[in-house]
Image (cartoon, rainbow, N blue to C red; front, side):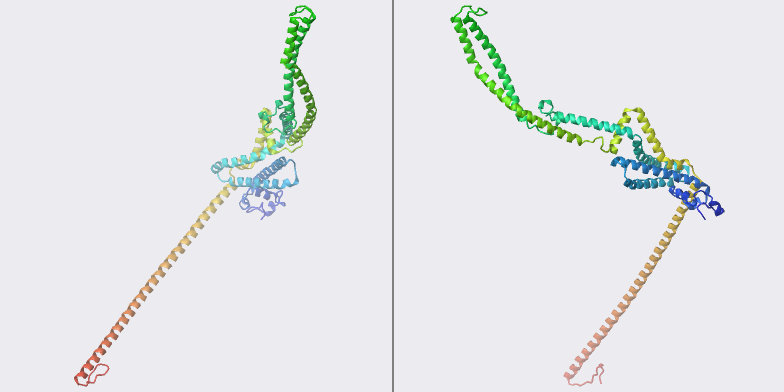
Length: 462
């Protein structure tokens, strides 16, 4: 009898079913967890379970495609070796869906009780399968968003590194944000600090020399005008070395000596010469430091993900969240696609539940109950047999104990009789010994008295 045959139906009619030669229907029904022996009794329901097996197979194929996309996104590219985990994942989903649809049997009340946990398992599995497919659908937008973010991160990192590795501390070096962004310590920093100190000293000294020079020049000009007879404010207009001329000239000389104007001018020229001598090497050191900083910054920035680096799964998921959070249309489209894929992944359970209670389901339920009763009866019979064996063994053990007890009593009586016989024998022997002893005493006594009685060993006298 073939797979499509039923009691009372000719085998020739079963060979007319499409796909019989390849047994495609049977193979698909295997995926639905069908018992062919029971289904042969209701052949009209084969089509239903062939379709259910096709739904289970389709869900497993979608799961394999999802795993392929997920691994490709994680590893940054596709490879023929990814077929192995994809096929393994397909088999896992296939067997899980087969278990789900094969356990949802029985009457509607039982089916409703089994609905919620089965659907929860299917929904969780749907989320796992749907997410890589959603990421693949939005791949173009996600990749562009990630590349833009990477470029922005590289630009921000470069700006921060340049700020935190500048030549001058005032430009950003040492700020709280530069704690982990300092790459190099400027080799020209000690020279620059010394140069800044010398420049500050030179500026202060130059200001002082300029002020003192201006004041000295005013005093000297006033003394010159007084001695030359030029009438101005504070002069008398009389020519010649008069008292006022001498006083003004002495005041100018005294101020020049007191302010140490000549020494300060010489010191200022010395500082300017030293500053000029330091500026040349400092410029070379700063140029070399700038090149080294630029190289270090470029290496640091190149270490960040770039446009050509692979994009991982977590990056895609984060980018999808950011894009959908900014755009309500993308948010709705993403969830509609996700729910659609989840619904597809739940189809095996939904199709099984929406199909109602079929004749095959009732027969399976009846077969299960029958097998359960048979199993209980077999267990009861085995238990009764084992109990009988135990009772028989207990009776046999009790009989053996009774027999051993009787043998023990007989042995005890025999031992008592033997002991009594031994005691009697000992008493008899002792009595005989005492009688012989008494006879010997009598014979001795008669001999002492002069008579000679004849006494045999038995004690009789003649």
